[in-house]
Image 1 (tube, rainbow, N blue to C red):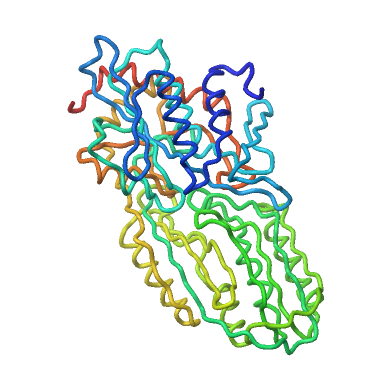
Image 2: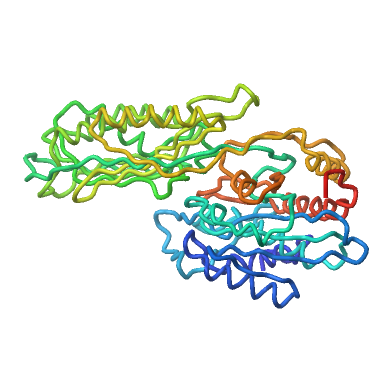
Length: 481
């Protein structure tokens, strides 16, 4: 097996077992049953709340009954993406894990380290008989990746702890004490189909972009397939009409592939050649494997009106995307951003989904207003989800001081204490569980929400060692019990 010979082999074996269970957002029943059965076999109390979250309870070891209880938290679902040639079925197929030395990844799909590694860390920690600790709890939520539904509906009455370590971060050595809030924007432009008046039809494909997490990777200046495709079409100066447009898969994934079909009397392939070369040159550092192809295809019978096509493409071309503002409070952190995530054409409308994030509530609302006005100018009607709250940093938290001490004791150096632009469940759970004080950590995990997602084995081992050191040193916690 890929994990044979690794230090903390039990931890990685658990992660492999988790990876055998399909767990795309909304399909968590299998992984929930696995966790509850696993807990039962290992003498751990586990229950589910009404929404389907799993809460685990581990009693204190003898002599540690008065040590403050600590909860560890993560989510059961994963973002499921695969290469364009993969036949993987996320409803039934296990993740095919590959290890190359220190790197753990998956064959042709996302790995699910986000957030399967949190589940593995908890189950390994809770069954480590060598540890002496106070009461431990595990909180595993559903549908984190598609709207934080589990966190929003968590049954707070089942939670005893008032100190929580979220295990959904992706950089070892960093303790996060705040995160961005966000909301989704769904926009729709009505379309009218007419008989195709043009003589040529072209298919345009954009692929090979890195994609990635719309929070953690949004500041890396990666190409967005929707923006690339709309740039090509916006620069085409002949009349044309759309009949197909499909791009993006998830609201929290930077789109890496887009396809469109247009009809025209001109030669799109010839006229777009220089623009395509310019785009590839601009993306050579961030997305060296980008591929853009244009091929003439059989003529389409029905297309949408030229005027509607122009409005849609021009909107996609000028629409805000990526970083809007950098933080003035924490150097190097994105404050406000937007991911132009999904665009699709159906028989009635052209639809666009955006994911707006900001670490500042007022900036998030301002960006929402601006987006709505821009889309309305091009004939789109927009609606917004309820969103999720920002997690406001508390650098004076006594619990933070305890965790920093444990970190320094284990790593022999200071951690980085900062905030993250991605959304974490801490802010929501802090609101639902009165008095909860949260922090977030995790091992090195790269290219999440993409087929290049990979995990560093050594970093996982270090993170597990730190967690063991933390629970054994909670007896020295100086915060209120």
